[in-house]
Length: 145
View 1 (cartoon, one colour):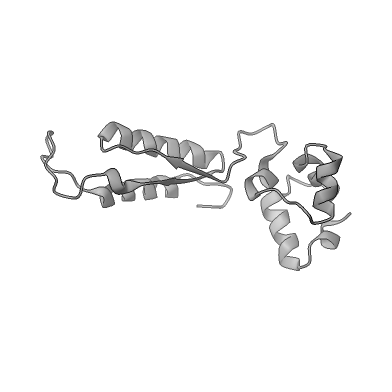
View 2 (cartoon, one colour):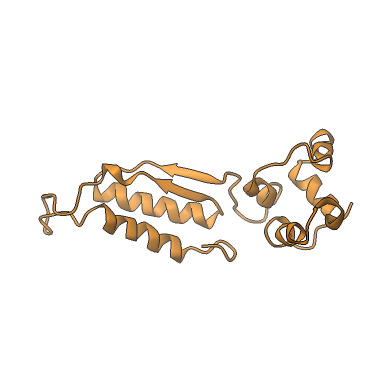
């Protein structure tokens, strides 16, 4: 089968080519890769009765690069400098493998809260959200940011 025969629109073919196809693999090769050679799963895909999530479509069966099969990760965050920078590091690594990230900033102290270091008061959750935003902007994902 050809991708043009499977997808209902030109944009569907374009998305498949740009996001999910690995190199110049054929549509049938792609189905074999993402189904891990399981003919039952492949048939469900061909029949449009089942489809994996995006990261699996892009990464399953690719062994020459480190890639994530999960779309999204949620990282714990505590109100310490060590935890904040570890989370930033974990976000960077996850983005480098193609995954997406989220974290709950509600545990971070509001701006101006007294702390026991040279700054004397925290810069607040927004400043650390900006750190995570900068981390996100720095790590490319094959054209995605």
